[in-house]
Image (cartoon, rainbow, N blue to C red; front, side, top):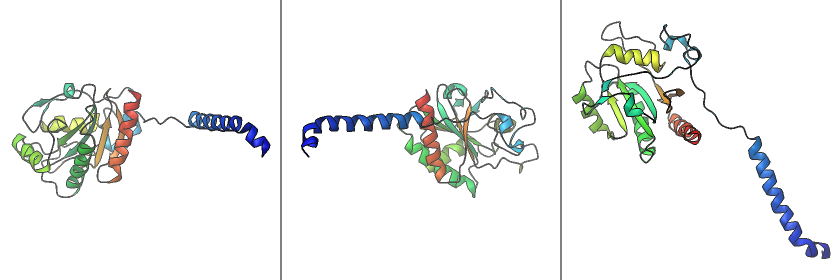
Length: 221
């Protein structure tokens, strides 16, 4: 007891130093979280156009020109230096789309104060989902125009984006009016237009997974 009283300050200092050292060693040995950079050759070939299925590196989301719910032209310039989440839907869908839209709304709310992240939803029946239809849908659902673009345009252009760029659709859309993309995929795209994640947009846990992965991307910027 006399020894402890005599050296209690020294013992206290050593205890604190030991905790600091052990904590530092623990963090040094923790693997750094990284997200994959997805290439076409890594994806189920059914979801990828044959012209790009063998691509192994440097894949990015290419040019596009579409109209949003306000009739504004949307291009990659609107997503310059932004992380974004993309999906494919249509306004009259009654099965997976309402669930996906609800999860997109949750992401919109969670990211409302994060100016680096946007949302982008492509209609897969652009002949029906024209600008006024998308506008009414946006109003009904509570879409924030500054955060989330619902886009329409040329059908072939949209389906090429789905298969050649986002690597997320089995159909190429050339089989008639009822041949459409019906994918549950949410696609996470980084600031360099690279695909960093695929998620099941019907799964409630996907929302937290996407938010977690966005935080990883933002730490790397």
